[in-house]
Image 1 (cartoon, rainbow, N blue to C red):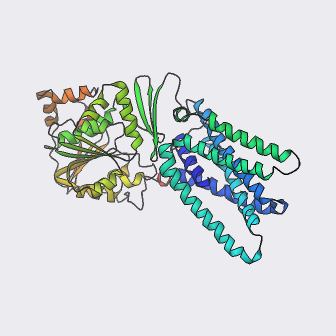
Image 2 (tube, rainbow, N blue to C red; image 1 turned 90 degrees about the vertical axis):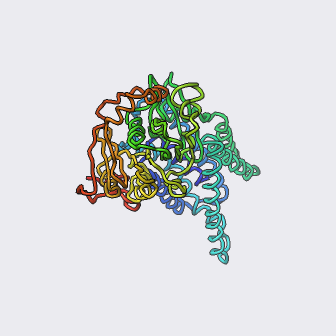
Image 3 (cartoon, one colour; image 1 turned 30 degrees about the horizontal axis):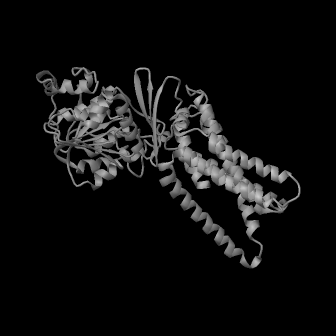
Amino acid sequence: MAISLELIWFRVLEVVLISNAYTFAHLLAFILFGYAVGSVCGSRLIERISNPRRVFLWVQGVVALYSVSVIWLIAWVVGRDPYGVLFSSGRGWSISGYLFLPAAMLLPPNILIGFCFPVVQKAIQTDVRFVAQRIGLVQASSIVGNVLGSVLTGLLMLDFWGTTGSLRTISALGLMFALVFIWENFSVRGRSRKMIGGLLALALLLLLFVFSDTKGFWAQLHRVRAGDGFIVAEDAGGVAALIERNDATTLYGNGHSQGKIPYTKSHTVLGILPALIHPDPKQVMVIGVGSSGTSFAVGINPRTEHIVVAEILASEVAVLKAYAERKGEGALKVFFGDNRYEIIITDGRRELAVRDAQFDIIEADTIHPWRSQGGLLYSKEFFEEVRAKLAKGGIMAQWCPTKRVEATFLRVFPYVLKFPAVNILIGSNEPILYDPQIIFDHFEKTSHFTDYLNRGEISFDYRSEEWLSKGWTLDTLRISDDVNTDLFPKDEYYLNNR
């Protein structure tokens, strides 16, 4: 139960707090602090506990009741805070978001869990001859429970039942403890214990029926307002949601905005630039689907035969498909109906490493570098893997969110173009033959390119400043040695930046 709850706590708080690289350690600190406080309290009070077995059963039921109830309550409160006044989050700091919210959710149940450590010892240590053996049995049971909780919840329950179904399972397990507690006290004189057990069981039973469904629960945590359209999908990888508000639809992955529909200019240009700079881009790979803006735009060149799109969050693809079916037309309908695309649910970096192919274009439309694990997609080693998978004359296109990403990119690729207006980098092993007039000719001499964008509902001025570039060659001085690596993802741990 403890490990199952831990997975659920982190999933809920990741969405509400819009997590970054520091969030996991921050939340884990509350859990460990709760264990420590509970253990100290339990060891101080253990002499007063005459029946540790009953205390253990009661505490397990209370942990389940509190944990499920407080998550339901927080979702209700967040849902009535549509502008994020109470719990501001993300890369910023707020006392309400990073102190009060995790304290309310994590401290009470983990103090109770820690309190049970000495209680369990007193319950089983009834013979000094078997102290070591029984300590070993308790530790073995704890390890088995941790493994089962993480595997069953992380790989099965969240995948098939989602967070709400998993919380109902926790309620059911707590109800079992409460019923055993009632049975243990059935023959005891007096009504107080029976009443306490009965109220606990009744409260846990009610939670099985009054807890929100999956859509309602995540709608509250995504601050969906009246009149908004909302689609959500959840699996073992995370939670994806689409919110239709006013004239734009925003895709969220684990609480983070991943892109908009209609597509933004930055995502569109990131796809169009390499597709029209490369003279013959037959094989293309895109890491990260997002709202599909970059993936859709990179298919603008009719010479392109095959586009591999690797996305680690399956629920994002599920939400996009559901939205495409609801609309019945538009860019997503074109995107999913184009047989050139091969959409794979996998880690993009792994797919790049294991796929026995070379590509004319490799695009990275990925998460922000300050997200947890984001550094692995902005590191020198990653760019080196990309460079090794480029075909003759192949190019890589990459969003450039920080100066350090630019320095890392320049460290790896000998030939680089930067488009400052949209912060896009294009790198290659060979000189990049770039002439904006060639791109203008594509639009002016044939209707295909404009028609393609129109099918995607993209309004685009091809003669705008996005095409202005700055270039580096082998002879250009690379000044900065301050780069991201796999072991030192400096942009991920952004608080270290000056």
